[in-house]
Image 1: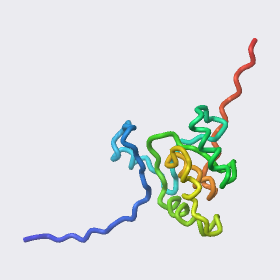
Image 2 (image 1 turned 90 degrees about the horizontal axis):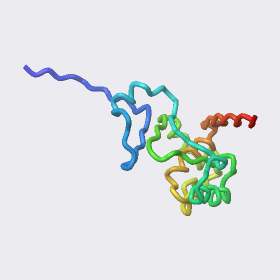
Image 3 (image 1 turned 90 degrees about the vertical axis):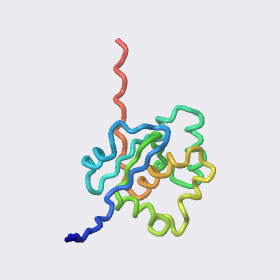
Image 4 (image 1 turned 45 degrees about the horizontal axis):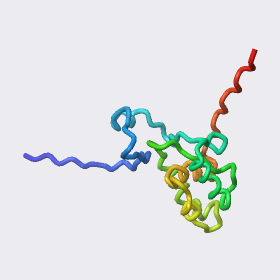
Length: 140
């Protein structure tokens, strides 16, 4: 006899982005066990931590369209968005930008894929400010 089982589809809780040039340090199956509901994982920095001239171009272009404090850049590689956060990013044009599309601000931006998600998370109020680096000890 053949036994038939009913499978239920669970909606995705996260979206994992990767890049062909950065290798993961653990298998995706291991990452899944560490994901927390409604928590996104993005390693990012702001203009004060950008050192290369090409990175600084990101802020030069985007500050014409967006508040400077909202502009951030993610480190190349992997980033994970909670599905609820991704939905909020998709709704940005109607909820925060008076119908304007956010992606258009990134058309002339260097490495737009590295700046889009942390900037969008900042615009919807989901980006936790980075912990500032401790001040160097005074010379003795």
